[in-house]
Image (cartoon, rainbow, N blue to C red):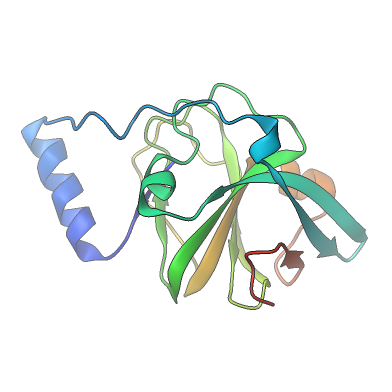
Length: 160
């Protein structure tokens, strides 16, 4: 998963696509050991749901995200934290796993969900408005666990 911010990366991505240029170096992702995962809890209308999440809190980790990851445990995910609340643009380039993306505001409230995103797609997936966090889970997890807009996420990096 690569995160884009602002208009410049969109213009650059379009240029690179047209020019047929591929940038290497940020695409390699080392497998992250389970000890690097932390608990995250979502409170739904049906109760609490727990996940172990890896963190993407730096530009480098946000840029690589779950790229090249062939599998992820059903109770795992990746939590992206951005330096400020803003419109967030995501894509699935080099990501073989279909994902659910949960867009989360400053308070930890889920404000949007992009379900079952298309692997390897370069289509932009935009947050429904300004957000501070994005939680990526295996596709279908939001529906299976009853997670919906308005539910709240709790984690040590979510300032709520």
